[in-house]
Structures are given as structure tokens and as C-alpha cells.
Length: 474
Image 1: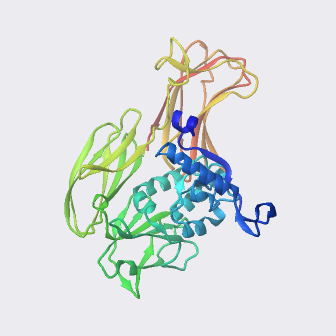
Image 2: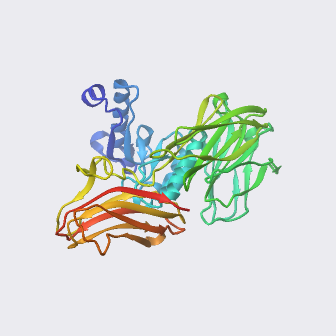
């Protein structure tokens, strides 16, 4: 603790394996045990947590696994599919105060989307996100961000107080009944797009007080529903969206009585921002809403929100260099933030390229010398499913003896892929000059991820690439 925490400020250590074993009983007569529960990992976690907090008030301990005695003292990294998620719901219900993570580490990347969906349903934290359906996972994480306070400060109740008969739809209940809040959050996953799946939610916790009811979905929609209560249950239907949440609020802390979110979609030469607001207070309010876009410019609107009312609007924002953050402000505070990813990061290789005095753009290029075997460079492309694109680049080569080309790889479900090739001119004569490379292509409608690879494999030539530009056409 003196070295790592006090001197080096390493105040969030991770203990491998510490939470993986099950609780066992000891019959060690030398210790006087006759079936007592002994758990060395629990003792270690307790000692580390207590001594760490003495060394630094910001100390936090993480442990691999979800052993319930260990995770009393250490946040549990439960992503490994062999011992993590199998009992997560029971763990969260029995120990709602334990902080558990789900995601891609420790083998969890094998079931990345499943783990993230389970984290959403169970109110767990998101661990590393390493693989899987990039678009679905990104939408999931972004959607939960808007609900973070209600999800993190509520007690997980699993399906207690819910009535849901359609097995194709998953839903869990979270209750927040302290700290000036009285509300219920229902998180739902409906990957098959089932329409009108009936849902009943017990509302006895509101003790007859009026409450607002809001359906939110991952595509950026918010709508108010009239609380129709029969037999102690609010009756409604789960939306067909892949992810949704039903928020019931009778009381909200003063700094949390306005909820908002923003969902971004790239369009040709513009960014479409779908913003929503929910008034969690039983009073009307006039709000000045402002969206700051990726080009640094903003748009302001005056909004009238009725008691327990909602607002939805789409904004067209100009694109900025490199794109970036879009922030939603209201009542003097930032309500939500989202990020418009560039179509291709570092398109002129200024970060990790090789210096070249005649680089077409900037000072560096992507440089490959002659090599036997595979040689290439890959980078993620931020394409939209179904979008049409133009990709252009500069390239030069000393000859044709090698596999010298570019390739857009577009991933689809079940391991399927589509490709678009980027080739040097077949009739090229001047091998000392930079030439234009280009390709037009359309992304599949079920796209799950995309990459750009530039190659110089099994080659006797020297090859440079630079000034890659990706443009969305439609």
C-alpha cells in the first residue's frame, strides 16, 4: 500500500482469480473448524479493501469473478462466461449493493452482446467492450447512459412486481425509493421485435400518489403514457425496439427531475441529432434547450414541458473537422452527450505513419517495404448499415510484383462478409508518381462492423498510401 497506493497513486488494483471460487466449509481440525465457512479470498479482499481505504479515500478494489463474499469488498469482474453470468441475477437480487461488471474481459468477448444485454437488464456496470456487433452494443451502452442515475441508484428486483408472459421478451424491475426519489425503472430487451407484448407493473410503491410514466427506446424516442392501473398493475405493452425502458416517477431529486438524451445518425454532409426530454416533475416548465454540434456551432430552442411531459425533435447539425461530440444542455446543465465517430480515424497517417517529404497530405504516409508473406494495415470504418460510400486515396508503388491493393471488409451476422476492392490503375506507366485510388460501394443492411485494409503482401515493391477520404453519398 505504501508503494502502489500512497506513492504511485495506483488506487484501483485488480486481483486475478480472487472472486472465482465458491464458498466452502472447512473441517481443518488444526484450526478448530467443524464445518465453519472459511474463505481465504474473502479475508484477503477485506484486508486489501480496508488498508487501501486508509491509504487513499479513492481506493477501489476489483476482483476477477463474482464470489459473493469477495464482492462484498471488491467490485466483481464477472464477464467470464464460465462462472460470471450464470448466477448474476440471483447475486444482484440478494446483494443489490454489490458492484459487478460485465463485458469482454476474461473470455467474455465470446458472448459480448449477451453480456452487455445482461448488464443492462441487471443494472451492472459495463466492462471492456472488445468484439461482437459493434452497432448494437454501442446503441445499448449509449442508451443506458441516459438512465445511469436511475439504474445505478435503484435496487434490482429481478421480475418481482412484473407480469410478462411472452418468453421472447426479457424485462427486469429496479426500484429507487430513497434520497428524495420514488420511482420504478423497467429495463426490457426485445431482439425479435415482438409487437404489443403485454406488460404489467406493480405500482403499490407509489402509495396512491400520482406518477408520470415514460417509455424510452434506443433509437432516441420518448413518449408519455397515461398510467392505466387495474388490479394494482399499470398495464402497457413493450415496444418492438430492441432495447427500451419504462420509467415510472412520483418523486425525483431536484437536480434529476429533467431527463434527456440525444441519438446521432450520420447523413451526407450533416449530422442528424434526435433529442428528447422527459419532465419528471408534476409541474409545467419552460426550458431553453441547446445542442452544441461537432462543428462547434449550436442550436437553441425554447420548449414548454407540461407536467410529466415529453419533448422530441430532430436537429440537422453541420459536420466539423474530424467530427466529435454533440452535447445537450438545458436549465444550465449538460443533460446528455453523444459522439459522432469519424468515418475513418487518422486518414493521413499523421499519428503513426512514416515521414515523407512529398506526402500528399501532411508530413507522413503509410509506408511498406518489400516483404514475403502478409503485410498490411487495418483501421475501423464507421459505416452505417445500408449507406452508400465513396472512398478515395493516394497511392504509389515501384512496380506490380506483389499483392498491392486496398480492401473494405464489411461484416454481417453469422460470420458473413462483403468486400469492396481498391485497386491501382492496370495501365499505370509512371511508378514514381502518386496516383488516385477510388471505389464506390454500398454497406449491407445488416452490417455489424467494417474495416479498411491496405496491403503490400508477398511483394518485391515499395508502396505508400496517404490522404484517404471516405464520403457518405446516401
